[in-house]
Image 1 (cartoon, one colour):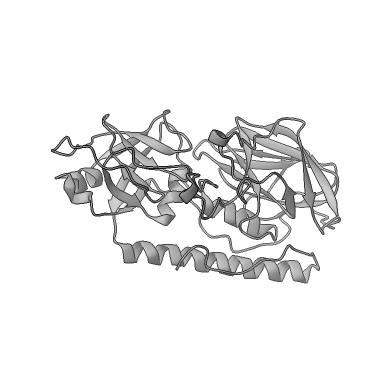
Image 2 (cartoon, rainbow, N blue to C red):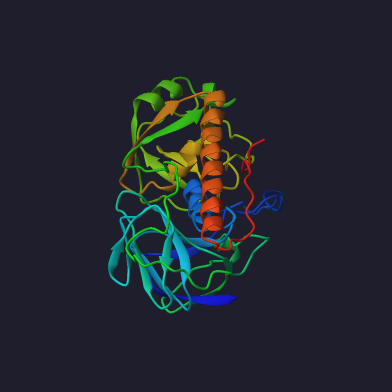
Amino acid sequence: MTTTIRMTEVGWRTTVQDLGRSATERLGVPSGGAADQGAARVANILVGNPQSSPLLESLGGAVAFTADTDLLVSATGSVAGIAIDGCEVELGQPLAIPAGAEIRILAAETAARTYVAVGGLLDVPRFLGSAAPDQRMGFTQALVVGGEIAVATAVTRIDQPYLGRALFRLPVPDLADPARDDVVRIVDCAETNDIEGIRDLLAASVYTVTNRSDHVGIRLDGPVLHPAHDQEILSHGVPIGAIEIPHSDELIVLGRYRTLTAGYPIVGFATRRSQDLIGQLRPGQELGFAWTDRSAARADALRFEIELAALTAASLGAFAALELPVVSTRVAVHGLK
């Protein structure tokens, strides 16, 4: 059936997100998608959704809504507290929200983005196959107080006698948290050695996230070095997590909405797991860099995929035991070849 959630609070900015577009960059459209992919994927797994399902992404403050029917809801990423009709509940697990009750998720001050998943499929607009916003194309996906989202769900009633407790316990893996880990792991590239001393400088320095950061990338204040020559570098496409040095004395770590290099030198790439950490950094926070190799970065990513597969299997088992229907879910290694 179709139910409706109604937004009662949207924080500083809340949008609809997913994991982004595929095969659109050749059209000049960035992949986009959740800045902290790990948190978004876990939030969906916890409520029985496919990992790529649309969900809410909030950039601080509080996000709150009510629903017409009982719903399963989870929140990951920047979460300081959750309340259902004013009753504080446990974090990090799926929650049963009674029909008409308000769930309110308060963001933490140490991380940037909160992800809220609702069991079922959000009926939201798509652009090139994805719900991810693209402001340059006028596809904002921004939510407002009083706004409504239709949800196709097979769960209409959940018997949960203890409102303040999680529905069940699941093995949630550790997610990106700047309060716990402030080191971005990076690998080198063909251009790393074009700037003499850049490896040692990055490894030994502390950088501060500036308020000039945006959805394209985070900008960092701190020591930099520039190429010895003044030749313009041919602009080209770059992977997510590329670290570039513009003409000003700063670093830019490119995110999921990056396009081309704009002729700036690239000195390394953030690993896949560190990209989630970058997505949670707020202005004023400090970070350091640590060099690693590709095999270690890949092993770290694969460990996380194994943890997600275990979480998916556990959640599906729990749903089956409670006879709760779920959207078709595949256990897969996401995006790794």
